Image (tube, rainbow, N blue to C red; front, side, top):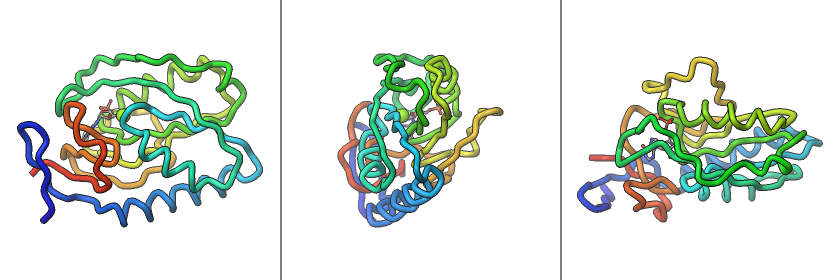
Length: 179
Ligand code: IMP
Ligand code: MG
């Protein structure tokens, strides 16, 4: 079993890149159908979703733009509950647009609920969420709908393919989980 070490922790292979590639393609195909004839703005939640979003947008056949927001709630391996937003929304770029939020992973859903609430103030014509991973067992977002989900996973901590442990591990093509 493939393993990696990031500072004090060991992680083992969870989802290989070949599998991720197919899943991202499938997500893009659904978006292509659902938004046929429309233009979308992919709102990338930095830093974690940058790899996922860059693969996803290259599979989109519809007209698409990119916008970024930088937000975080995680410290180490746990959600801090405090959300910090380091890059504000480009409201002009989002007003009247079909916005698809690209996220790496939805855990409790607190980050996404905050983001959607803020995003509504930019008055987009629609909002959808595309997340590569979701942890349904820790999800508390009552009114939050996840429109495109790549994988539902148990409550483990994962790294790779954009996701980090204390800033490390984003560059791996596969996804790893704590051993
Ligand atoms: P939530 O607010 O609890 O849903 O946490 C979501 C955010 O925490 C995501 O944007 C991720 O950046 C980060 N996160 C949640 N679970 C993990 C994980 O297993 N590995 C790495 N980052 C995670
Ligand atoms: Mg994230």
